[in-house]
Picture (cartoon, one colour):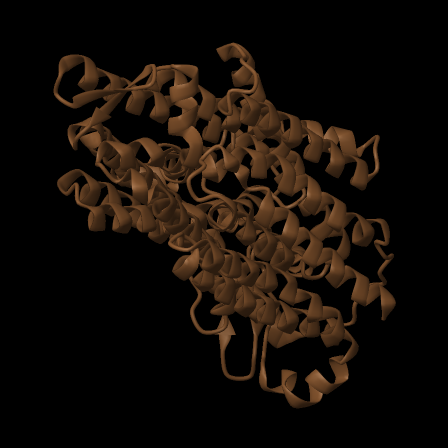
Length: 578
């Protein structure tokens, strides 16, 4: 029982790490001040935002470090990267020291690299301590990464609401303090025995409680995250947020009282397991075995529609053999039917991955959906400033952060609904992409504060869902054992998107200033564009790009739907058999 208690302590520590290390989401809070101090153009400021995202290209270095160093050492390496990266930027923006632009660029790169190292540590902790429910552990902790900007906004308002440079100081110090707080649970990491089926269900129920607490935390931050009217009230609100983050510490007590929960509460719930991020290994192996039996039956001259599994009253049949009708159909049928995945969970090497049409459709959907949402958040400071809403930057940042958090939590809903409503996860991805073009259409057609807040909320909700569901889809389509390498290949689109979309927005911004379409004001040594025209064309272009991503996701859904349906039918059949 001591081991069971300690693993929940580790989960809480992982939640803290994720909640306080999403420091790239508050870039827009201080970007205008950084631009002014450095005296750079919008294009050069975009390169600094891209540098932070470029850290994801080197995320594999954290995995290499774990091969030679203990987990806690890698954690503090990440903490000190962020401490020096953000700390020196704070000295620059506070006019304590002066650094050339190229050094500030590398500081942004170092800061972004620290975030990927923190993420790797959290993933390893969840996988090691929750082998049976690693899916739920990963989904929950990844969700808390989305509230970082709202928490930092509360912290900034509680200390000094007028200082935007304070965000950089907090970015440097808080992750280091959090790492120190998480050190004891990590050092006392238990060796756990495999859980019995009742233990897995009990843990699933506890995760359900944690998700309810997470929703309450998100609602709290949404309602009070941007409050800055009174310093005392802001400090009380920040204390409330810390209390909600500390509240899951009661989980070890729930573990000790497991028998009481089983008798009084858990018996009324029926959780048939969760497959949020990774497919259940036993289901996957049985699925593959049934497919091999079906293939053997076909080779022996049996009909493919002969039932493999049956009950007294019904029989379930499913054939994954591709029909030749695709070859006789038109262009769309050829695209949908050519080289489809035969089953979920088939392992793909990096070489095989890049040869798959399904991967590139997935890559385009992510590139034109999640990546563009992240770039929008990086530009929130300048967008608000151009529309005369500079005072609302913190509110917009909190809205994006909170709705991103809700989007991440919503990505687990399909698994809780699995018993009643089953839909391919790639179909949920398509649904999640729908709000993005709607949001950019709204932003392009209206420049008022309500449209800005509504568009920001929709983009945060959409991108949050995509970020959280991405590991799940990668593991299901291209194999759970290869997910580490394959997912790192997928997220290369984030720095690429940050560069391309950010550069596009910066070019439009600067061209409006130079042409005189926008009203150019000079703030310190930098030129500021004012008016709707500053980002109107950018919103139109981003909206068109998001439609391309939506189309790619629809094709991906149509191409993979049969594999998801096959897996679900086999899973239900095996449940009836065994």
